[in-house]
Image (tube, rainbow, N blue to C red; front, side, top):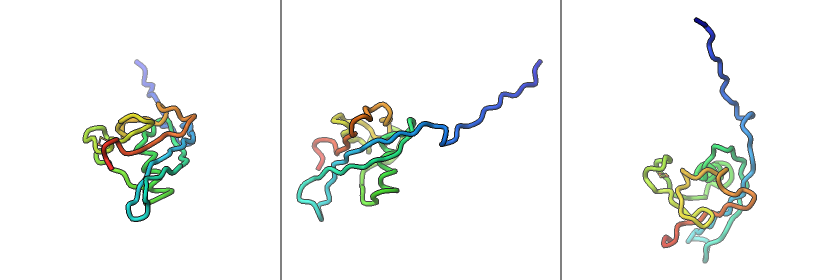
Length: 114
Ligand code: FES
């Protein structure tokens, strides 16, 4: 019987490939804007990141005024439903790497919501 112990080293963030994604977010602030406007953001992401992670990164690191709904962050509550590249999806269940990152990723409120 072998006493060999499998050693596995957890991947460090430097070992996980990063890429830059461009998100184009449709925004509206009724106190400032007459009409909704589109704003571009560039974010460094990992293959395991979701659209919700990208939005958090933008809010925490680039523009604290970015506002969006989310709650459970695990695909249960549905509160982060939004239109991503023209399709209704949950931001917490949509991996950035599954989208075509050669083009900007569009994010907007689902149709029917102001
Ligand atoms: S935040 Fe609850 S489903 Fe995405």
